[in-house]
Amino acid sequence: MREVSKIKAVVIYGKEDFRYEEIEQPKAGENEVVVKVERCGICAADPKIFHGKAYFSQVVYDHAPIVAGHEFIGEVVELGPGAKEKYGLEIGEKAIAEQIVPCGKCYFCKRGLYNMCDVHEVFGVSGPDGGWAEYLKYPDRSLIWKVPKDLPYGVSIAIEPLACAIHGVERANLQLGDVAVITGAGPIGLFMLQVAKLKNPKLLIVSDPVDPRLKIAKELGADVTINPADLNLVEKVRELTNGLGCDVVLEASGSSAAVEAAVQMLRRRGRLMEFGVFAEKTCLDFSIISDIKELEIVGGHLGAYTYPLAIRYLSEGLVKTDRIVTHNFPLEEWKEAIETAEKRTDNAIKVTMTPESS
Image (cartoon, rainbow, N blue to C red; front, top):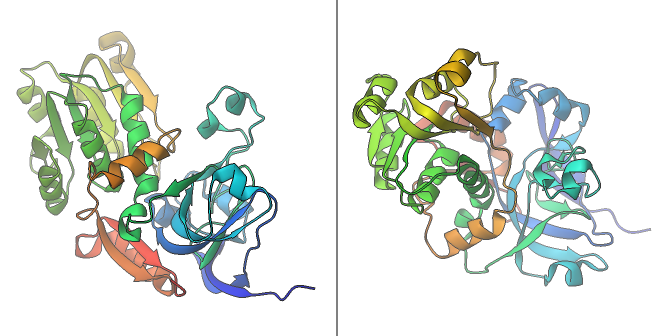
């Protein structure tokens, strides 16, 4: 009988019931990888899960107890039978798993749309234990990517949100010469900004009600920044486009007001790409979408096929993280970390945590 080792983790039991406690250290089975978590991140959805305000909160609670967190990066400490050959990994290398573990068998997986998987097992949400722990197991069927050793953990923790941002920009079908508006200058929005910049649009506008975030957006390449509390966003966009409206809106705030503004400021035949996670339902005037403007609306979910690009962009310095990853806490201070992210304390943008053993 093997000796059972204990590790520290943040475990979800229910609404506003997260506990920092000891759990059994995971062991690698066939085609499985165990990593020592070096850094884990707080997504905008995590405070909503904590308070029960995410639309999928009950799904999380139905899987409780479950270790929280779908943003993580770690060092390989154990390779199960077949894992070395399957993933090309060695002990001591850095590795990340995509946030979803697709079934590979459903309608969507068989068509390559694995981020739409029917089973939809997401680390720390509806499937395996998440990364708010000292050690984490990437189970069989995980999509695992090797990360360059020289990419610091403070940078590589951004792979997951950057992969999501890339997917969002791709879904928006941003073209040369487009005028694009990004609503929300949080981590996803600021990463979308940098990725969109690589496509050389005509004009990149960023909207957010927090001035320090707009300052960072400007430093990262925004042509125009707008605080909707100070200026009428729709009117300003129309003014900047000679009354036409913008071509694309990338919505990354999860704000009902931002969605309503999006359909107003888009030109006819414009496109709204919605990536935000909402705490409440949003109502729109569908006559604008259909009869008046014939708009396109597409959603963005997770980061399908974009992890290699995210790793490359960070490795080559094409996307910067130093102004986005603003805070790091010990994992045991998870509650303060969540509150800092949720309340944007001290101009927090991306908040991360470091487990005690790292």
